[in-house]
Image (tube, rainbow, N blue to C red; front, side):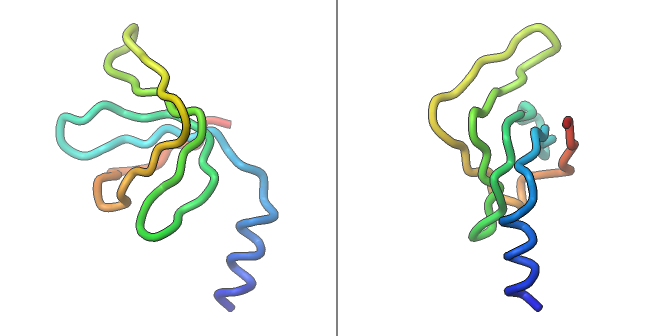
Length: 75
C-alpha cells in the first residue's frame, strides 16, 4: 500500500502552495514537490513577510513538518 501511495504521489502534478508556519514566522509560498524525511520540499520559494513585502529565495526550501500549521493549495 505504501508503494502505491508513493507512486500516485510521483505521478500527480506539482502544485503551488502556501505554507502557514507556527509562531510569528512568515508564510512561505512555492511549488510543492513532495514531503520527504519529515520536511515539505518547495521549489522557487518566496517568503511573505507582509501583504506588500515579499522576497524570493534561490534553489529549494525544506520546511520541517512540525513547524507547519496548515498547507494552502493555490493552484
